[in-house]
Length: 305
Image (cartoon, rainbow, N blue to C red; front, side, top):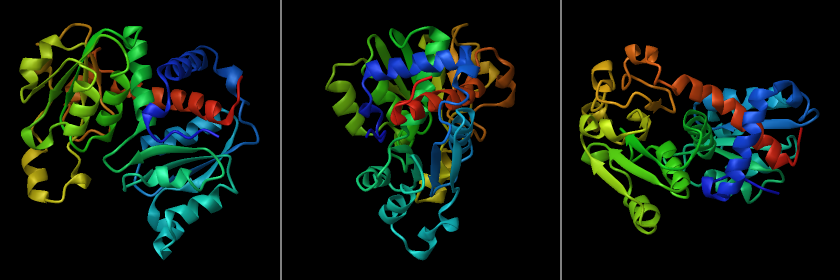
């Protein structure tokens, strides 16, 4: 039985295989309509979500399966004091696969230790978000035709941004990737990622506070919002939340084939005018989330079209 808790649980070969299945789903959706007939996905979301939860549910329904679950901790027995472990033990009797989001780092890992069915980490605190990473990788692959040999800039909240942490870990295993980290001092990428992932493997990177200076060299720009829910001090959030705002003026400095990604939701870090720029790929990125999650559910359940 396989779980997906961290993106490194998948080899690069397995990621490439998932992307290949996703491409086939896009090309031949009818082929996959009944692959999960009779199977049930449980969505255990102890933290609010729109895209991730609905894309998981849509993915299972598109595969012909069924869905059950809850969308906030208050509507589950967690409100009565039930432990995550007990919740997962019980739900694994009702479903064939579990997608779980939790505000505490490590909660999905603890869940997989007691679950009788595969557990997918749908985001745990500021730690990891592997299915968003698969979404990002599929989007980059569709835009560039490869996951090798490009420069990617990460801009905004790199300290608490679990999507950033997962994507850096994933891309570090491909060849020819150069990283540019754009953030204020208070929101820089955690040192453990710099030391254990980048420097340990002699990967090229730079850190800067200037989006304008970084822009001309980027092939992919990964924007993030400053996450209010991760801050202990509201004054710090208010001071930092508008540090970077991507607009048409800044995009004049960018390459004509730049791909702009964002895991969403955005607040005001990308202006509405950018939506009409052909380089804006974040809504397609959100759509790709359903496709790659279809491929992942099939893999973890051992199913093929």
